[in-house]
Image (cartoon, rainbow, N blue to C red; front, side):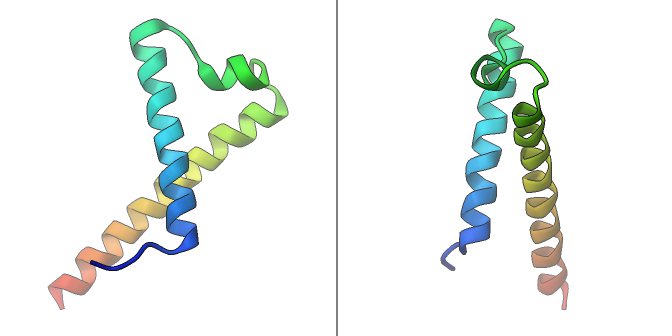
Length: 71
């Protein structure tokens, strides 16, 4: 199994944060990011944006991995 690089680990942690936050929102109507950083402050928006970028990064990595398998 290949070791994850630094960027992959950062993306993984951000996806965990995002997934846990959405779980809390869905089950308990509690937004942890907003509770910590404030509702739609600059910092909370940066966290949300980084989670979104991490998802895109992982999606691209999966697509590239699948593309290599087809060759």
